Length: 123
Length: 361
Ligand SMILES: C[S@@+](CC[C@H](N)C(=O)[O-])C[C@H]1O[C@@H](n2cnc3c(N)ncnc32)[C@H](O)[C@@H]1O
Image: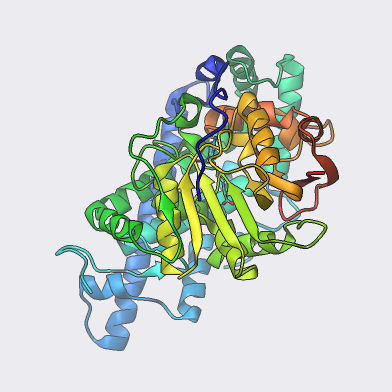
């Protein structure tokens, strides 16, 4: 049960919003030389692409071992068991930590939660 | 089952449709982990070092362009802070871009699902292709391209995007169930009509309906793509929840109508005149004895630098939340009282948000 709107006046005095930073998405950079921003971004995106290849390889090997064959459709439909899911997640996190942990100093990494814990612990 | 000649139906994760390919999904899992490790880990350190840099430079943490520019410049002096900001921004861009491209591969099929659900029950849906969206609501919020209003699949995008953002803690809308349980109710205990403002994809009202199966439950949002997707999601859960495209500052409901009105994470995303008008509208549509629950960021205080300092200022600018600085600096409790509410409590411990609860006398 809907009524007519009652409050037509709301919406005045809003011209200022257009000028606020964030109103447009923009292209901020955070280093004095924006090329460093670009390079860091490229390195992160490449890491993501590499991880998808590693994941696909793991799934391919698994299917070959268990089914004796693999097709693109089988890969798309594949739902890993809880164990395999957990292993993939662990591998992914280790990969992230190994490749990127040098971005920060030890002081920056020393937090209450041990996010970087796996790295350097003899794996 | 094959959806088109090209893609295999990869099913859903909880209530959220899976990405179109396994590669898209694993890329996004990577982004989610990167956020945890590279953003959340150095958070406190970056806050400390960055705050010092901003203070040393004498830059002001305010929302105006010249202030943001000088904060930005001050932060460029520290490589780790720059790295953290770059990581944050790039990951945010990366997940939106990937989600939009992935669902985009089967846009036709997803649009058909929306259209088919539009006509289905049990709940009702109202939206208007000619609805005039106010300019303030057209921002690319969270830098989601097209924000909540432009892209017809924005609801799908937002659903998967928040899945990446929250890194799994909201699986099956678990956080919204917690919230529904913690929602303050009128002192007389009667919850027969419930309205959620800025409902997005309807997660809260759906959980409310599970808790109060006999109540008439509504969710409104300014974005047509959001309410259409919210409706689809409710239909798929067979929940009788009503959704409508509507502005919170201009509600199409009678006076004294609802027992509870809620707003979760709406207020920091709307400008101050709209906040004031929304509080007045919530007061109008609540019945005497009804209760208004606002969950949102805490207000800025000197002890709470994440909301008073450069992190908020830059998040407002670079994560597309331009009005959030205004919100954290406002005395929301006073605005509620001025609108006629009697403040029941304000608590930093509500869910993961700061809760503010007012009764209509
Ligand atoms: C962060 S989301 C809210 C999240 C949601 N309440 C939840 O619990 O998951 C903010 C929502 O508010 C909507 N919105 C923005 N301005 C609005 C207005 N004036 N009236 C109604 N909805 C609005 C946006 O379209 C968006 O979907």
